[in-house]
Amino acid sequence: MYAPWSTAGRDTEEPLRQRAWICTIGALAGCSVLLMPPWHTAAHLGETPLAGWYGAFPDLSGYERSFAMPVISSTDPPSFRQTVHYRWLGAADRTWEVTVARGPGLMPAEATNTNQEALQFGPYSAWSFNLQGEAAGRRDSVRMRLVVQLDEDKALILAGHGFGPWDDMTAIVQHFDLPFIAVSLDKGPRMDFRRSLPAFRGLRKGAVFADVQAWLGIADEEIGEEIHIFLYILPDGSRVLLGFPDRQHMSYAYHERDDGAIDQIAGEPVRS
Image (tube, rainbow, N blue to C red; front, side, top):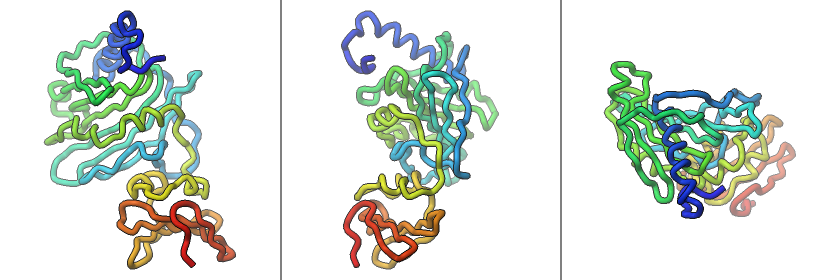
């Protein structure tokens, strides 16, 4: 497999690959859809879904972020995806639905939508679709869509719902770390969202506050005066405390056991 931005093998294979992607994207945009892998929500644990991949879904200023449960197909090898909803908190009526996915996608179908535009995000090819006319007065219909090809079987898909007015779709996509997402999609999403110590042990000094919240959920309590300390209570009654001096980047994390002992998890050593 070569990356879609590579020149190797493109003389003969690229036209076929581009046609396949155009067909897939046309189908995603509302054109002729033939078949789709049998997606299902895999067995999961935990009541509230969070980010299936750490750091894949940034916080967008002015938007409320909520996560749908990741889904995994029953095919072999499995395909997987997760969708996150960004709802505008101001007066405009718009919600962006962002999906990251890996899999064979759709079977080739003829792209009949003429309102498509080819774009480029660094090495990644993309296509945008204006579906305002097709959506008519239906609020829940997709008004616009943008698909970024991250690899032959990987994509980021942005879909807009509501009556608007709308942001520039390309500006929304630029908030996402596309190379990081492409690498993250090498593995499937986590499906167990129960609060556990191993989920905290993967954190590192400098972790972004919004990424930590997307991974761990909202803390049980915020304590501290000169530094923001976020307290998470684990099922066994022990506690994890995360320190964010500027409420932006984590400086330390430690685990306080039932016996009062404190173990450093990540970041700077815990002061006595």
